[in-house]
Amino acid sequence: MNNIKTIVFDLYNTLIEIQKSNHFFLQLFKSSKNGFGMDITTYSQCVMKNDLDTLKTTFPKEFSMLYTQNSLYLKQELNSVTVYKETIRVLEDLKKHYTLFLISNLASPYKQPFFSNNLHPYFEKVIFSCDFGFLKPNKEIFKEIEKVSGNKPSEILMVGDSLKSDILGAKNMKWNYLKINRQTSLLEKYEIKDLTEIRRHLKPN
Image (cartoon, rainbow, N blue to C red):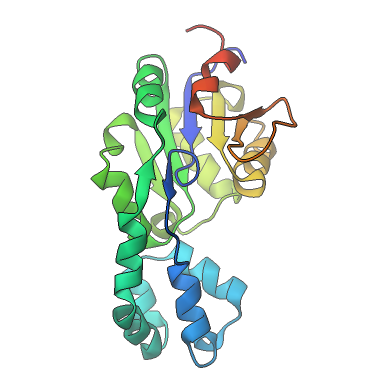
């Protein structure tokens, strides 16, 4: 990859991971009487496209009640988040040569580990779907990076673990892309097993 100026990272399963997942918001949905009056797809998208205060005021009161009753499970999830061992070292190295951005599809409470693990200083701008109102692979969330960075698609590299959200999203924008695959053997040229392999795909800068 030549002429890369900006590298955009996903967050979960790319830079950090939840060690003990309780699928908190899914469990709230399953515990509700009728799914808060919506199907699981609509519910999931609402959760990831709105902040918590908005959810509590627009969803039925049952949502806030269940959220409070089960908040310990959310706390356990967030406390179990760990940073991959190579993350800080790679970000420190790349920040010397490239402008770094982050875009993540997540529910509002899951922003907290990003800040508590001090990852925010490495990034020029951070876009969370729950604040921005769009989810990857919607082009709007990618266009925001182009607008802020001022870079052409050929100058941007997306790094993430989701084929649909990260890779196809970047491909639709004609960005460069690398897919993190920590679980199985690498099958595609654009797959990498961890963050340390980003460098070998980049022309020395």
